[in-house]
Image (cartoon, rainbow, N blue to C red):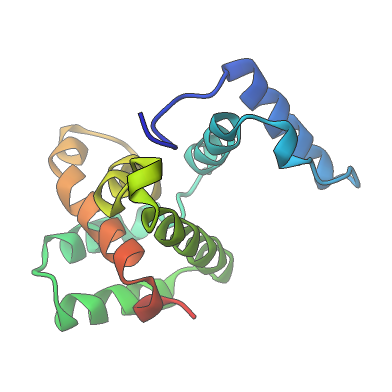
Length: 160
């Protein structure tokens, strides 16, 4: 129903993805205005899903889940800041840009139908995932989403 929840046309998403892949070989940056918003959103979700190692890294999965299980407050914020600092630089960069984007989008929840919680439900399992998914992964969905919601809602505490 909201942006990032509605699926874009699969063929158009693949075309958009291919256009972005051409950039690395000298191609022009695609004009995102030429694509439906749900295609652009779907391409971003696909990019994040296809990363071999998710933005919050498989190796740190248990720590992110533990952070998500903590009570919201200064202790959890400190743990999250520490985890972010341990991420590879490229992962930190992607996470920072994505969290600022999602935070900005959440400000228009009345229009986009995507508040912090809804955005975390969409992005949590993509950003925080183990190398091998299991039944335990399903049990950990709530803490995955909680840690992502925390970063979206309080982005200024975690990123410049």
